[in-house]
Image 1 (spheres, one colour):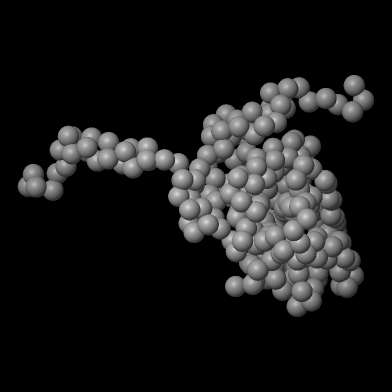
Image 2 (cartoon, each protein chain N blue to C red):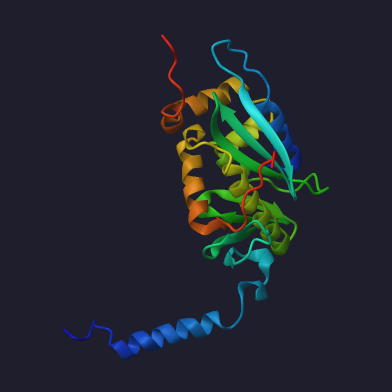
Amino acid sequence: MTQNMESPVQGIEAAVSAFADLSKGPAFAADPSTRVFTTFIVALGNQEISLRKPIPVTIFPDGDDFTASFMDANISTGGGSPQEALYNLQHLIADFFLMDEDEPTMALSEKMRHQRRVLAECVCRTSLKTMPNE
Amino acid sequence: MPNLTKDDAQRIATKLGNPPLDPNKQCLQLEVRQKGPHDIVSIRYRNVLVGRFGIQRGSNRNARHNYIPEQIHLTRQQGAEFASCEMSIDQYIDIILRDEEIQSRLPKDKG
C-alpha cells in the first residue's frame, strides 16, 4: 500500500533535481534555431508603465525568423533573432496597453476585452496620462 | 501550411480597408498607427474593436508574419487566402459576423 506513495524526501529530491536542470543555464544557451522555449519579460523599457508580474513568453523559430508570443493575451510578433522578437514583443505589449486606455469597454469585442483584462493583470501605469490640452 | 510574409501582412491591412461589394455590409474601420518597431493596425466593425495586430517595420519584406491571422479571427490558411485574391472583404466580414461573441457586441439595428 505504501509502495505507490512518494515520501516527502523523494519529493524534495525531485524538486532539487528539477531546479538543478533549470540552473544549468537559460534556454538561450541552447541552439535557439531548433526549439521552442519559454522565458519571461520582466521589464518593458517604457517609462510610462511597469509590470505587476513577469510576463511568460513563448519563442519559436519560424523559417529564418522567430516569433515571440504572449499567448495569454494573444499578442505576438516576430524578429530575425530571439532577442529581436522579444524586443519587438516588449514594445507591442506596451503599445497595446497604452492604446487600450483610450477604448471604452463597450467598444471592445469579447476577445479584445479579454486581452485588456489580461494586460491589466500584468501591466500598470506608472505616470499620469498627459492630456493633449494640458 | 502557407507562410505569411510582411508583404502579405501589408496586403491584408490594405484589403481590410476596402469597401465591401454588398451594400448591406458596412466598411471595416481601419486605423494604422506607427509605434516603435511596428505599424499597429486596429480593425473595427460598426465601432467595435474586433482585432489588432502589429506589422514589423524592418526592411526584410520576407519577415514571417504567420501570427497575424489568429489576431483577426482567421486561421492561417484563411489568412493566406485573404492576402491573395481567394477571399474577399465581404467573405471576411461574413466570418466576423458569424462570430457570436462579436455579433453580441454590435449595436442593434434600428427598426
